[in-house]
Amino acid sequence: MKLPLVPLLSTLAGALVFACTAAARDAEFQVIVRTNIVVAMRDGVKLTTDLYLPAKDGQAVTGRFPVILTRTPYNKTGGTIPGKYYAAHGYVFVAQDTRGRYGSEGVWHWLTDDGKDGADCAAWIAAQPWSDGKIGMIGTSYVGGTQHAMAMEGVPQLKTVIPVDAVANMGRQSMRNAGAFELRFWNWIMLNAGRGSRAARDPATAAVLKEMADHRHEYLRQLPLRRGTTPLKLAPEFEEWLVDAMEHGANDSFWEQNNIVDFPGRYQDLPVYLVGGWYDSWAGNTTANFTALTKAIRSPVYLIMGPWIHGAQDKSAHGQVSFGPSAAVPDQWAWRLEWYDKWLKGLDNSVGRAAPFATKVRLFVMGTGDGRKTEAGLLHHGGYWRDEQEWPLARTRTTAFYLQPGGGLSPQKPSAPGATTSFEFDPRHPVPTLGGNISSGDGIMQQGAWDQRGGTNFWNWPKPLPLSARNDVLVFQTEPLPQDTEVTGELEVRLWASSLAVDTDFTAKLIDVYPPGADFPGGFDLNIADGIVRARFRDSLKQEKLMQPGTVYPITIKLYPTSNVFKRGHRIRVDISSSNFPRFDVNPNTGEPLNRHRSMVTAKNTLHHNPERPSHILLPVIP
View 1 (cartoon, rainbow, N blue to C red):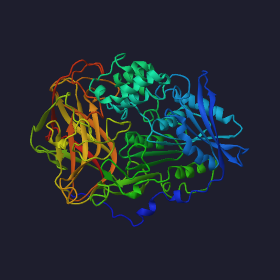
View 2: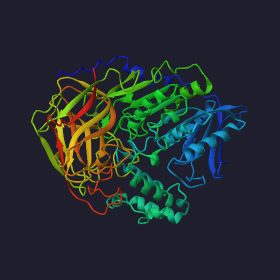
View 3: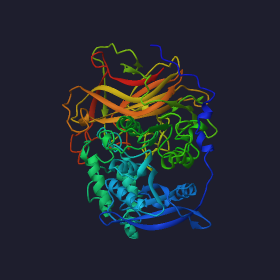
């Protein structure tokens, strides 16, 4: 099969870097800060709030201004830099500790209070003499999730949001990923239960919780987590949420908060700018939200996807890979100012005309670098920005690449009747996580782009062994590509698989295989995207159904989206296995209720790749 060529890069590519940041207007005001203002919610709980007000000659300016609001569980003092920036440009900036965090009263719950609390905060803002009644929101990750929560609550004062790497669709492909639990949230709880929580207000309790967090590697080896058995019991709301989340696999009402994909009609009709990264933990939900919201609301919905890890839009490199200087967005506040000026002040500016607002979809196409080693010792994978009109791209040629007996990967269907490959998955020795779509991995995982071989960066795979050497990793790869091949869009692996266990996991990883060269004599196996499915959720994310041992089932693994050029001479590779730890919790293969198992068994899993059951990956090839 002839593979399409990647378009030649325009000499204008450099000009596509966020032109509006250079044109950002000068500051107009001084800034006055008022801290620890108490705002009462409808149930009487008081949330602490900081204000950043435009000022002149040391006094707050009289008048009404639009407001930029951030609601955070990470301490409102983190709003100091953006607060001063936006207040100096004619906004009131409001930073609030969410319920049960840092200075705020109440009991913390994961986002479920943030719609109503956000609405109460907005009503308070609208009643203040410095407010013109218009609110825009700002924030990343959980703080981006508070934006979605308010937008789904229907807050009349809310006029626009810019959710960055934001929490959404938690039962789909984030906290629960096709039934598997993402242990980054276990890590988030372990770290945050002892800082900024109600429990941490007692120094002795905070010390016990910190000691627990300091020994996270050891606690990881003791999973599953049971109520009352660890120091986490000292922070009961954190323990309760985490245990409930780890026991609840179905994508149902438990995960309904911020479920945009299933309930897009609940989202407020307002301009939305979605920001995500190809290596971010929320990437699949950021693109899914764009698709859902463009159909559900009339207001403009914009999307930008860079080669970034979580919250690192100002960086051009991560892991072991550089994407070139144009990958970074150097001024995080100025380009947002353009957006707020348009939708909160009605200014006629670059929105709709210049980067990053020229079109509604802006993508960083990775992989057009020279593959040499940079001065920092990183692989120069490179890439460039491109404006598009939609997502997924209308010109996509969805192409099946079939898993072949003997480890090949080809657009031709396999021809050997009955061909299968079996492997043993021992949950006591899971495949280690080497990069990927991770956040909150502090201390237990590395984010982003990594050569798929071990090293001292990985506590559970410290030796320089490639994952492809493991007997429980099935490797399927093309011959060296005859020409550059761009893959941009959503990714799925469709398997026919069986197991001798009643439940197990299947994982898939897409890899860009660099050939050996002068700078990387062993080559470089670059992870592009990965995914998982827990077999009991193979038919539905809403209902569990155990397997019949030996029965062959069709199983779909949804990988995270990407945009990558696999260059001439590289190979496209797909790795299939049954674990990716500690990115995901390990399936004990016993079929016991989630997070309540007491034993583990080794599963013999079989992949079918024959004319009758042609397992394959669907690649969105761009001509």
